[in-house]
Each structure stands twice: as structure tokens, then as C-alpha cells.
Length: 256
Image (cartoon, rainbow, N blue to C red; front, top):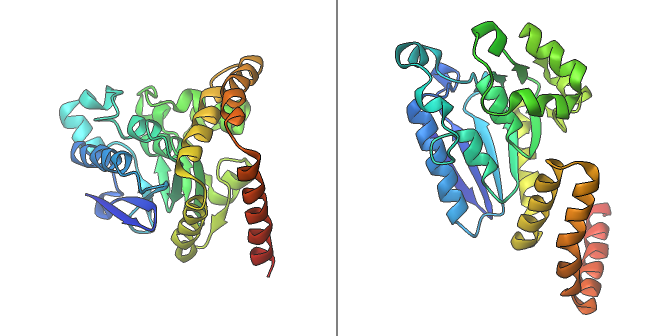
């Protein structure tokens, strides 16, 4: 139900239930969390891509048929060992969501758990919690308004309406939109670009951004100083110069 691929410092987790819109069944969630554990333990991996099989769905969220038979049960669990959202959020490397189709309710929450989101033209987002009558428990009620603004988040959550890929881009929910066959090559190119950055530095920088994002601005600035002052004091000027020259060379190659 979950495919895990690794190549050249990049891991890809694919939710593989296209016949069920990649719905998050108990079994899929378990395999997804196991794949995240595998990625976390592999120090050769610099970045992770998360996507769904096929072109119809990233994931339609919790398997409602299964939910009707067994109740929420483990869906309420916030452990990274059993909940895919918290499994993603526990990773200290960058996570790219390649949103290939619909991301509905729990699937929307999974998309929001990614650090960076890019989408295909087939992508659509919907928060149907109000329609189903279940309150969000994986972060959507707090994250969405911070990502796209309070008024827009209220519109989506109070109606359950779909947001298409272009509107998601216009609202800042996704960084870029691609044709379906261009989505994964673009995600891989983005992830491979990150592999050219020192892995340990990426982890520190991600932690700074994510930790500070949960603070007020003044506290976040103080936190940045607390981390950066001792870290930068250990960096030699020779290292900085070598990296400066490497940046110039990279710019020439990209320009050429």
C-alpha cells in the first residue's frame, strides 16, 4: 500500500491505493509511518517526497468505510509511530508534498504536514470536516489559516468547497503548479537541489524555521539568535570563502 524508493539522497513515499483514492486505511497509515521511520534512520537521505499513485488522488483522507465499521480509534493517536501526519512532522529533513490529485480532509492535513507543496493541475483541496461532522485533530484548524489567511480558511472549512490548483497557487498554499507528467520530475529536481546542501545544516535550519514558526515574532527572533550565535562562531572564514566561491561557480553553471 506504500511504496518507498531511494535514489541519490532522495526518498519518495507513494501512497499506493489508487483504486480507493489512496485513502488512509489502518494498514496504509501503518506502512506510511514505517516508511518514515526507515527514512529517518537512513543518513544518506537529504530530502523526502510524498505523493499518491495515479493522477486522481494524493489521498482522499481517512478510509470512511473502515471508519464507519470501527470508529476513529487509532486515527486520534498523535504518535509518529501510528499517525502519518505526526510521522512527517517528526522528520528533521525537508519534506516535499507532490500533490498529484485531490487532497481531502485528512488528505488535506497530510499535505499541510509537508514543508513544501507543489501541485499538478489535477490537484484539488477540500476540508470536509464540517460536512462529515468530525473536528480536525491533525492540525488543519490551526495551520490552514496561518498558511492562506483567516478569511480564506474559514471559507473552505465552513463550506467544504474544493480549491483548484491555480487558486491554491494564488492563495500561497502551493509553490508551483505543473502538468501531471511534469510534477514528479519537478519534485525530484527540487529535492536533488537540496542534496547539494550539507545534511546536518539542513536539519538545523529546518528546526530553526519550524520551531520559530510556532512562537510570536519577538520570541522567534530571540530563539534564532540563541541558535545562530554559537553555531556561526564555530564557522571558519576559510569555509565561508570556499562556499562563496562554490556559490559563484554554481551561478555560472545555472546561467550557462
